[in-house]
Image (cartoon, rainbow, N blue to C red; front, side):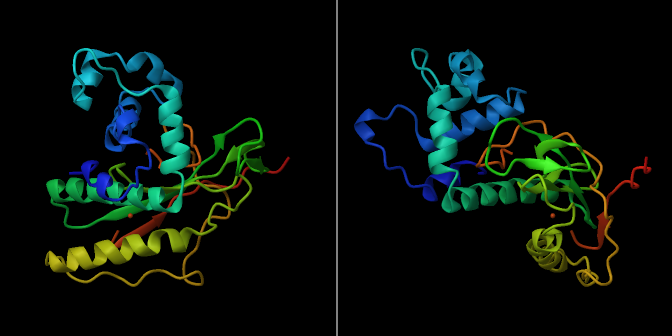
Length: 238
């Protein structure tokens, strides 16, 4: 229900006669690897023959999962464009909706956090961040008060912690505000604006992303009554 609908959103331009792994199978393999703690795509080269993973992917006894090179092409060529990112965002939304319905929450509190994700080399978006004192990405995360990830956005390393924050949470607030009204939980306060909201000038406290971002970066990867900005005090000047 979460991953299978991707087959209707992603265009597979490969020749069917030379295809061993469907796009949905490869997305599922990547997600399962991350869930099991194998964030590095290179891990696919030995996990692809793991019996439990093959069973989860619907592979036969003599078949294997996708290799690292195939998963890398999936991330960059298919999921790394606008259509792919939109499909992944829809999958995350389906996952979130399922979780919230199961918890039967009466109120949704969101935490908006930024953190540094150190990176090396000349990767797209990597820049020096003066606060963290390193070359990094500076992603933005949105969590529920219970720590469930609702959304994420990869940003260049040198942007301000609040850069694009309102644009980031606005569609989430609008979506779940309507949902909670239909559920009979009443109206919610208006979305805070830049003038009325005090946003910490420093970067928010680090969170553990659990994986390194790629161009796709879901990654892989939102809100009604209270919007809580989480930050930490400015470091003492030297």
